[in-house]
Image (cartoon, rainbow, N blue to C red; front, side):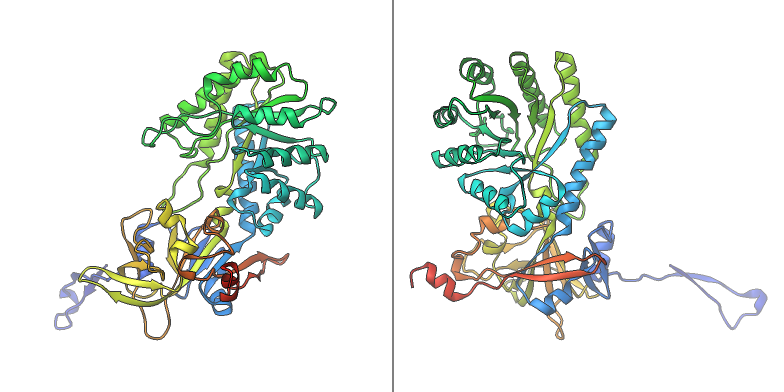
Amino acid sequence: MYICITNPSESDCQKDCKLIKSVIMKNKYYDLIDQTFDFPQDEFRTEDGELYFHDIPLMEIIKQYGTPLKITYLPKISSQIQRAKRLFNVAIAKTDYKGTYNYCYCTKSSHFAFVLEEALKNDINLETSSAFDINLIQELHAQGLIDKEKVIVCNGFKKEQYIENIVGIYKEGFRNVIPVLDNKHEYNMLDEMLEDNMEPMSLGIRIAAEEEPKFDFYTSRLGIRYHDIVSFYEEQIKQNKKFHFKMLHFFINTGIRDTAYYWNELAKCVNVYCDLKRVCPELDSLNIGGGFPSKVSLAANYDYEYMAEEILAQIKAICANRGVEEPHIFTEFGSFTVGESGATLYSILDQKQQNDRELWYMIDSSFITTLPDTWGINQRFIMLPINHWDCEYQRVFLGGLTCDSEDYYNADSHANAIFLPKLQQDEPLYIGFFHTGAYQESIGGYGGIQHCLIPAPKHVIIDKDEDGEYTTKLFAKEQSYKSMLKILGY
């Protein structure tokens, strides 16, 4: 900014205007975020130095429930499902794709009842991973949340109990259950358990995809080898009247990415589909699994529209070249569905200057127990302060309460460092990790023993009523010492 200074000793006609450059220091935390990212964003904004998440004043939530605290914002689950449906349906229209799009929710990403209840408002199908998942399906039906026409895709390496449960719900009338074979032995178990006079069961096969070169192994442990699938179908499944072969399943561990590796694996999968379609006319569905990422950085720029359209365009082109009808598309989005609905809030208990360069902020819980992916797979989430956005900031390290040396967090996804406001005397600093709604509770052993007996935090569900006003409900209290000691046999 430049300021014009007038010399009062000079006459009006001889005014001497001098330009002086004034440097305005921008050293507040808001300035850091504003200069680094496009901010505010859809789910984040600030008001009076405090953070709002989907227009929810988080300081009000903290004042009511305290910290540490897990929150789930239910409307985000439905909006993500509708977003995916819209992306693929628009892509179908743009590419003139002849198949349909079918959304499956990957239950293992979050099994909580409130998550399934919200997701099922959106006319979706379900994907399971284990024997107990089938019991969950039965409970959903008992509560009237699903009917027996729901498509249930059953993935995973299946122990006998899982196979028994799948056959069990099929006999109960779930005629759209689709066990996806992970290995040939599963087929033999299904064949033994199904009766000859029953309506044929739909069947799928998972392809054992080749892994990215940086992996410790070349081929996924899950699924059946590319070159074995057609012969396996012709030799064992084709003549068996107990089965209706419907689906080919494909999944890449690194997710759906715009890389030569992903497009090459997708092409290989579609070509196997075309090979199978030639000998199995009843095959009509291609399941591309999960892999749409949730947003883990304010700098995220993933082009969902392009990826959905390009996937369908490539499948369509390969099928046209092979003279094969385009398959119906299934997806199994988990993290994408529920990840962005969650947040984990902490307060900073104190700071510790451990050497000239390392300043630690100690949180009131543990990363190992509440956000296990941060140390297990070095996952990064969006981390922001809840208050003190109008204060100066500094580089810090975040430390958890356990005695484990790995209980820390020291880098964001966009930078190998983290910055937070300086601590103030009049009010504690609160921070939040956002889009943590997938997998953290199940991997962290929700409701069980926690490392160093650090209790699991409260969990609050946030929804919006018909007038657009937010409502809160305490789903779980902070874990008590009595519950832990009981598990331990005391």
